[in-house]
Amino acid sequence: MEQLYQSFPRREFEILAVSTDSQGVAVTRPFQKQMGFTFPILHDSEYRTGLVYGARTLPITFMLDRQGIVRQRSSALAIGLRLRPVN
Image 1 (tube, rainbow, N blue to C red):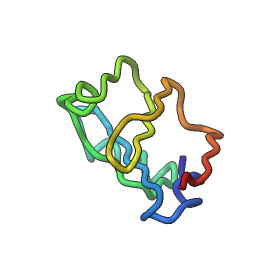
Image 2: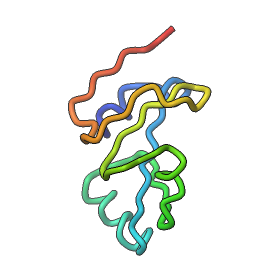
Image 3: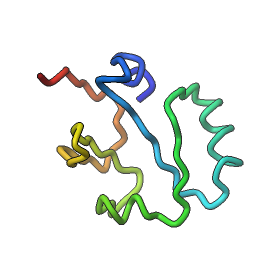
């Protein structure tokens, strides 16, 4: 995911990770640093984001368009995902 994040300019593409860990930053910041992730990790211990987007399993990846409409979802990690810009 980090490679994908670095491949596109922010105005064209964004990654927002969402953690549901109840310990929040105490758990995610060390993990983020260890993995070398530079994209933001948001915290949602009440699972509100998952409920809004209909997440049934974790981890899950959603691809949203600029209007916030889910265009694709996958219950697998976004490893090796290849994207191309859409006009």
